[in-house]
Length: 123
Length: 277
Image 1 (tube, each protein chain N blue to C red):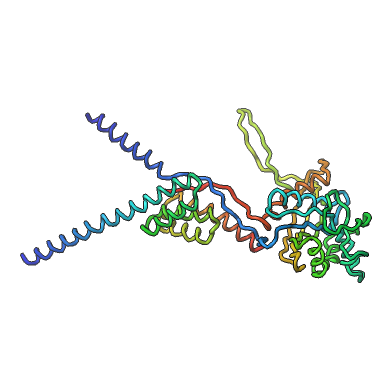
Image 2 (cartoon, each protein chain N blue to C red; image 1 turned 135 degrees about the vertical axis):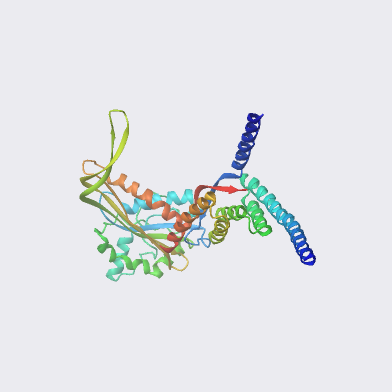
């Protein structure tokens, strides 16, 4: 009985240790990615879209679960006329945060233009 | 104490909400729609002329050449060649009769004098105003289409102007008259001053014009057709309204021009997107 309790306590302690290690690592990745995203926003607001897109690419690499980074990356690609890359980035953002209305709105606006471009080329 | 705590909590919530709002930034963006054609191989463009038909009220050939040249001058990277307009209908008719279209007495391509300068390298004396062949509908136009496949003719035109991109094609500008039900929004204001808009179906007689341009882009180096762009636009007015053919032509061309320019140069669509943190 005592042995069982000891094993359980050890398991709990190990789990807590794992959680303790994993949590800061995850938080670090997110905060690093967030720093890249913030910098990207600043430079995009000053018209430096190439640099901004590069920053958002970095952010998405650092934290692939960061929906905002993918959303911004979609916008950056769209601004550069890279429609296929933009579509993939927006889809990733929507998949990560399906309830985000702003991401959905960006994606819908993009789709409208993308469809128009396709129609033009098909004609 | 409780009220103070509540106020503190409320202000914290408000602050959180405000800081939450700054998590997104609306930015203007310009999405480029790339040109349908790769014109990087050309530095110059020659709007050679069109085979036009339909109403006699507008010389669609000359007007279109003039309009496209001015648009290309201001909205494309290509240098626009100012030259006399080719009498394509006549040349095509000659070709149909068996006379080679690409020959004149001095071996150059004949032209119709236009109100444009003609600094071309070998400018022949312009052929006197050629009588316009009567082209009234699409079926009439069909007979002239073969000239666009005459590679030797277009290669010769290209050689004369140092191998530019050649813009040519057909234009049909016809009067239209229709009668039928039209849905119109009728505005009314009630006693309380409230404005309401109600859609109403009205029987109307309408008249106007239709424009059917077909732009053909030819490689001046080879005489080969690179791209064709066909459109059809209509503009109808109330039968009481007296709209001159020329103003209707320009209204229709306003709709045609963006598509035409989009073939040769990148277009930018302005919009806004929301960046997130």
